[in-house]
Image (tube, rainbow, N blue to C red):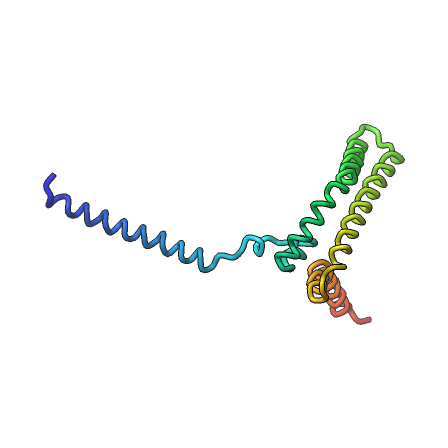
Length: 164
């Protein structure tokens, strides 16, 4: 091959490399400018949403309290899991023993309620140390979201109710 026959290939290669570098650079620029934190993209509910709305130091404090609480809640979690497995076994059995099924459902419910009470007590302990503004954010994240939806449903029912 002569140098004259290599010039068109060199020109094509340089142009292709320029377009590739420009495309990668433009994509990287677009990604950096419009990227949002991963936490904001996840649809969060309950304590996760409340933690997201708190300042980082309070978020860390709540996370530590919940981790400390995890050791106490482990027996409750296991009891609820075992009760639900008992429910599944009863439902899969060839003959259904209604009394055993009801007792397994009650055990699962009791374990869930006890676990919820433990988490609520931890949340109350955490909230007792918060200033008013941060407590308000906690309330909005935990409870008012559901209350607003309930109000909207009631309003829709009242508005859509036929007149008699």
